[in-house]
Image 1 (cartoon, helix red, strand yellow):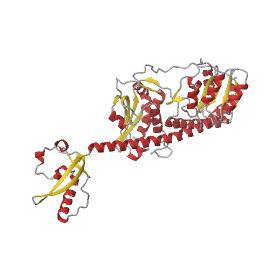
Image 2 (tube, helix red, strand yellow):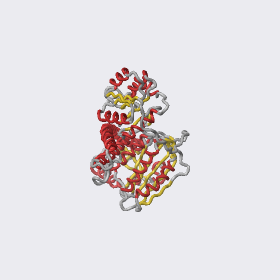
Image 3 (tube, one colour):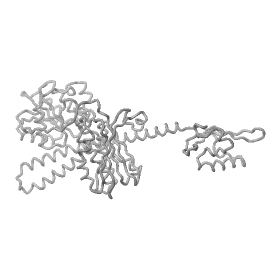
Image 4 (cartoon, helix red, strand yellow):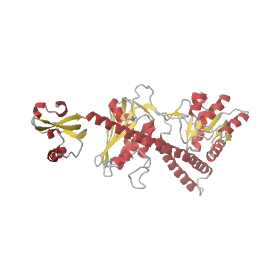
Length: 500
């Protein structure tokens, strides 16, 4: 009794049983007992009744009670068995949270697959639109009357490309370039830009742990996460307020891992972004990371900012948690795995300019006619000898009949009859000196692992400009070639081959 309620047995002698009940249950209990004594009416079961007990210090205890009665020496006696079911309730609550998190994760995964597929199709269209716009602009004189119109077409396509990149980020289908880095340095370097972004009415405070451990992440994508969260906080404080960015080392135990299903127990680095803004209700929080979900006025936001954050964090092996109260503010906490065992470090390196043309032979394989025609034209303009095929089977025939050297296979990843990696494997088995450059608007497990390119794989993300294509082709041709195992190994290729 003392362990459960805080009273000794001696203290309870002579006290009414209602002393151990939650205050709002005391009068209903008294009324029920009186009614039973007077009428014999037992309107509720006396077995396994769920009630709330009250501890001596005032906190409530979930309990299960079974009542009984007996007659002793002519007197009616009521008996009761009380069970503390706190652990059962905690287990049920943990199960409920786990089920909700699993359902949310499955819903986000389904939305992500849809978003990634949409981005893939749009990236093919945008590659042609931006590419031909660039070619037209390069052919027109500075004062040509059509120049402004074509420039506007290109600017619009570029804005659409930003949306598709955000969709790919959300769907975790983008290619990352992770490095071991100091999160404190990322935040500190961004502070001047963040201050301009949030405006003078918002005070920016950074609380950075000087002993912070390193993380492994794409530095550009990590900056995108911080910026998107800062913008979200700014918009939640239209009259100004406080924006706090905090970092710290965190040890996740088994209990913590139960609350964050995506994480295993271990060491993590935490990034928290908090604001003193309007806050959110539970309904808003349940849809917060879904693409195109926004509480802003029409035209004031795309609803992709937090979806992008979610995709980048999860693709980087972390998780994101949000806590918010209406009129009190919001806190986002991001947990990234500790990279203490990895020795590489990230330092920005200036890439020297490279020539953009050549005379090598390139086998171009792309099932989208507009993208294929654009790439063909760009490469011809740069001096390359281009042989093309609209499908992998035709590419194999072309390669068999071509008697000269093929220096580079430029191929899409996702094609109807055979994926790009399988095509590359078959061609390299006959032409081991041939280099390979994959291009796609949608990264797949065939060439990436958790968003990181397989070793030795060269990749060009759609949509790309003619200049980007020319630079990437030249860079691959100038690279010392070590045939990627993921391309040559027949078993790996067949398991990871991409088919719609």
